[in-house]
Length: 189
Figure 1 (tube, rainbow, N blue to C red):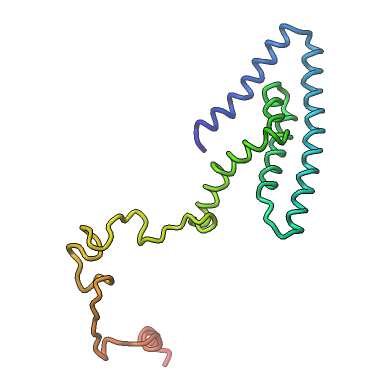
Figure 2: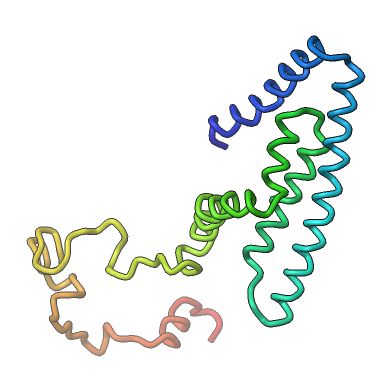
C-alpha cells in the first residue's frame, strides 16, 4: 500500500482527536459528546435511506439487463460512510456526510472509478475489460518493420519469422505429434 494512503488514514483520526480536545475545552463535555452521538445517529439514518435507494437502483438495472457499475460503487461508498459515522469524531462524520449525499457522492464515484476500479480491472484482465489492449506486437517494442532492430533490420535471418522465407524440412526431420509420443515412451509399444 502506498505510504501516502497510510499517512492520510492515520492523519484523519489524529485530526479528529485534536478537534474533539479543542471542542471539549471550549464547550461543555456533555455538549460535545451529544453532538458526536447525534451526528452518528442522523448519519446512520441517512446511510440507511441512501442504501435502500441504491439497492432499488441495482435491482432495476439488473431487471433491465444492464450492469449496475455506478450503483455498486455507490454501495461501497455508503459502506465506507457508515463505518465513518460509527467512528466518533467530527472530521470523520463530515467526510461520511460527503460520501452519503448524492450530489457530493457523484464526483467521489467518478474519481474512484477512474483511479481505483479501472486500474484494478486493467491489471486483472490485461486491458481486455476496458479496451486498453496492446495490438502492435510486443509491448514496449517500438521498433517496427524497417526500423533498426525491427523485423527487417540488422540481424534478421532465416530464423526471423517475419522475413517471408520458407524453410524446407526433410522427411526424417518432420514428425507428427503421434511420432513424438512414440519416441518419448519407447517401452509402451
